[in-house]
Length: 87
Image (tube, rainbow, N blue to C red; front, side, top):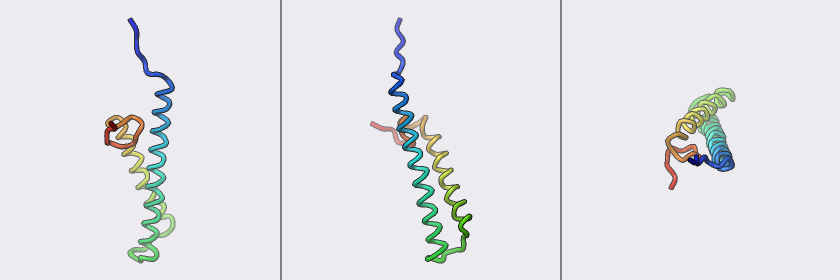
């Protein structure tokens, strides 16, 4: 009786790809949110937000992106932080 286990390098590669994907998504969400809040509070004068309020809003958005990515892994492609299944 033989047991077919996945190759360790495949597991490492999948984990590394997932880590890169989720890191990119979280950092991009933080930067885009910080820029959006900064523009809305500054030149657009839609509301008033301090630097720390802007960073807190961006941090909350990035945390939401991280949580979504972690929750998506069991349901989507294993090396992606998306709910969409790969081909």
